[in-house]
Length: 455
Image 1 (cartoon, rainbow, N blue to C red):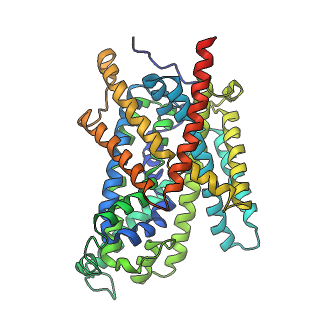
Image 2 (image 1 turned 30 degrees about the vertical axis):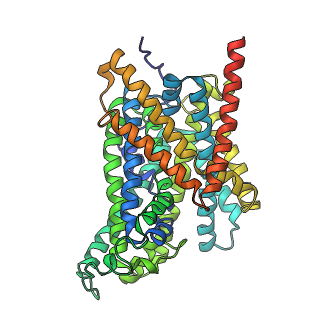
């Protein structure tokens, strides 16, 4: 029989506008504003194709996740789906891997935001800024889920406004409408080695450089369980997010490589700043610093929320300590929030003290985990779709396109990215360390399953 999910003890304080903005803002982060420079440096104008490919994979994963979450909303989202589809070992593994990924990445975001704030106020040491951010967002997440939603709504609104303004200014500059600009035509797209200066291998390298920037979309399906109408909310959020994100990402890349020669891009420097400087926007560097700062704090807030809900869901299913199940009067899993923050603090301390050794190993250990999580989402959807069609077809309000063909295409694409990462000297350590971390979690899951069966 088809199980109807148990009622969530969590609050239902998130509104549709919160979820829509969370879906849009969740992936617009420092990876786009700064990290895209590395992608342009290896792929040239072909980075547009790289973003189309990476974005298409992310869109397919989100559609699968949306289908399952609309049919059976749960705060553990894909961890719950994996358990129902593949067994306890899968739910345990994907839940703990994702939690580990979020609390480690949280340290990168807190440290990055602290570096920017330290540049503005050098009198306050970097560690003090980290402490301030962690305390503020812990407080917001402990108080009520609508506080998290409001923070994320305004953060996302600012990021989206920044990208839309960038696209408008960029297009005006491309057509020579702005003062002191003349139409650039296709010179930068076809000069300096043509549209694909490094050939298709450059496009592939570009995909490896940018695919992880799409991580974060999954939090929408976790948050949907805490909205008034989870089924409708997740459907709307997924539908609006994927298309707009592809538009923002691909559109801004197209503007950048049309306006500036790709050879002028340097990894680690924001191509957005380079474009704003070139069209004479005063204080472009500082403007983008503010946007990146907001993007980092937004990601920190979302990761803290996502990690707390994931570990709470694991505890609900007996896969994490039961003590984490305590929920406040306002429906906030406070102990789960504090557990995630505690590990986040440890990660931050390791990042500040040993950024190039201990923390680097931790970062490598989660480097490719997102792809493993996505692959388990696809495998879960393959199994669950057939079961839902048999047992409760009326719950399929959001359907995966061209099922099962596109699910298999997405799985093949993820496998290809992992294989290509193994052959890429810079990405190989991430795959190996992440595979090691995954193997450890799978081993623990296997031992737990074996012990349960023996009892």
